[in-house]
Structures are given as structure tokens and as C-alpha cells.
Amino acid sequence: MAKKKVLNRRVYLNSDNKLEPIEVTIEGEELTESDSEQETDETSQESNIQKILLKPVGYPIRLSEQASAQSDLEIDDYNLFQAYAQDQWVGLIVAVDEYLFDQMILPDFAFKIIKIIPESSRRVTVETEFEIVPSVDSQLKSMEKVGFADIIGNSRAIEKCKIIQEFMLHPEKFGRWSPKNVLFFGFPGTGKTLTARALASECGSQILVRKGTELIGLHVGDGANKIHTLFDKARKIVKKSGSAIIFIDEIDAIGLSRSYQSVRGDVIEVSTALLSEMDGLSENSGIITIAATNNIDLLDPGLRSRFEEEIDFELPDNSERVQMMQLFLSQIDVPYEISYQEVSNHLDGWSGRDIKEKLIKIAFHNVVLSKIEKITTHHLLEIIRNVRKKQDEGNAIFS
Image 1 (cartoon, rainbow, N blue to C red):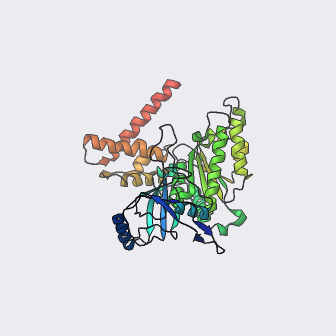
Image 2: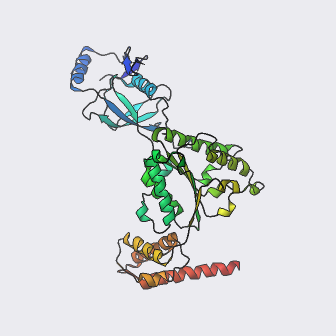
Image 3: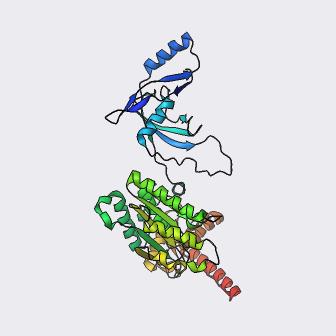
């Protein structure tokens, strides 16, 4: 079939707010008589498409220094986008997993066809509806999927997250009493980020995840601009979904007390931008901010006052350490025979991450390397002794 391109604007909104065709002008290669007959035969065989779901995927090539997140596209006027898309693509024969390219505002920007309704149809017409599939935050894509069932301890944090989840599903229940700003704090490795990941898994594309260090700029104004841009993106999600979550890990990187201005020159600028957004000087209805820090004492007092609740993530107790060992051991394909209580008695002061990374993972690696049959209590106690020994040696150097 000859390549086609639709010219001129051919649709308008009638009194019922529906798209109506005005004129269709198609420019392309000149068709021979045999081509025309072939196209007629193909046309009779291809049924018209009612709806196409498109995923923005960006440009075919880019310069290496450019940002890789090139598929973040916002549609502010749905009807205008329909007219714009039809101007370019009416008359084309398409299929799922093929690409449509913009030729006007964003030349060569690609949209991948995710779904066609009905599935057997192939031809784009003036009646075809185009829908953009919501993009998932790039940070969220890289996060391992976890659920609340994977979290041991920190019951108050889980309760708060379930309240937030309920708000995401049924915002009408809360009115002016919706959850707003929540701060997670505590020792490293106690599950602050893991809890946010569990909430992200439940809420899908309605959560934006950032590390505080990613919101620091190189030049004056950069940091504040990144913060405002982040909240602007959340407001756009609220327009579509009714609510959105912003999770900022290591918030102490951008929410330092203003007494540190002499140490880093953008402290006041960045803190002020964050305070203004959390105060809701812009319309932030439906946006929930969750932040996490290992160093709560470094935070600006004014920033801390904006959080409705500060949730302390404590080190696991004896019972929780036993549950963590059971969970982590169940996730590896190696036999084990463990006296959980005996091992747990030697893990006082260890976080959940310590138990996973410094104990269970090392035990698994030792089994793979030495080809022993199973993990035993003796193996785990030996690993704990080695860790303690290295810690004591390190302390001795700096004492």
C-alpha cells in the first residue's frame, strides 16, 4: 500500500461536544491503477478501528547527554489531542506493537500501539479514538515489587500506609481530613524505604519516588526548580486520578536546618521551595508527601512542623528477628536447619537489612562456594562472630 499522510484539519466539535469530519486530504505516492485495485481489496478486508491505546516511547535516537526519560508526555486537552492525532494518522493500516510517529509539534516522536479495539480491526478512521496509556514513574519501574505482607514490624507505619491506600481508592471518604505529610525516621535498614515500596506496589503509577540527592541542583535555583517540577507532576496525576503520592528518601539532603546555610549555599532556597509546596501555596489537594530520613535531627524545624505524623522505625525485637530469618531463608533455594532463637539472641542491635545482607546472603554465598549441603545454626553464628570482630577492629582504629 502507498504511504499516506493526512493534511489539513478535518474535524471539529459539534454542539454535542463530539468530533465531526470536515475534510480529508491525503497526500502520498501516486497510485497506479493496479495499486488502487489492491488498496480497494485491502480496504474491504480491513475493518475500522474504534479505539487505539498508545504508549509514548520517545525519539528513535538521542544524544547520550540528554535525559533518558523522554517518554513523559502530558495531554491537557483530550478533544484537541483527538483532532491532532486524526489529522496525521487517518487512513493508515496499523497493528499492535507497531509505532505511529508525530510529524508536527514533536517530529519523529514515537507512540507504540499497545491495544486496538476491536482486536481484528486495522484501519484508522475519523471515528477512531486515541488514548494515552499513563506512564509509570521511572524510579518506580526499577523498584522490586513488595507488599505489606513482606514487612515485619513497624506496625504503626503499615497502618498509616493503609490509611493512605484507602484515601487513594476512596478520597470522598476523607474530605478535608485527608492524610497529607508523613515522616519516616529511624536507624538505617529498618524498613523506611521498603515500606514506601510496598505502598508503591499497591498504588501503582500514582506514586512519584525521588531521593533527596536527586533534587539538589548544580546552580542557583536548580534545586528549587526540581522541587516545584516534582509537585507540578504530582498535580497532573491528581487531575487524572484524584490523588498522588510523593516519596522523598533521604530528605535530610534537601531539608537541612537553615543553620547549615554556610556549609551549603542553597539550603535556604531549597528548604523554602519545599516548605511552600508542603504548605499548599499552590493547589495541592490530593497530594500526599511521605519523606524518610536516618538523621531527623538535621532537618529544619519548620519543615518538621509540616508533617502531621513522625513515625519512628525501630530496630527489630527478638520475635521480629526470628520472623525475618524465617522469611529470608524461605526465599533461597538451599536446605537449612536453624535454631532461630539461639541465633536471634546474638543479633541484638541488627536491623532487618543487616540480617538479610550480612547474615542470610553471606550464608547462602558460603553454601554455593563450599558446596555444603545446608545452612546450619553453626554457620550463622560463625558469620555473626566474624561481623562482630570486624566491627570491633574498626572501632579500635578510631578509638
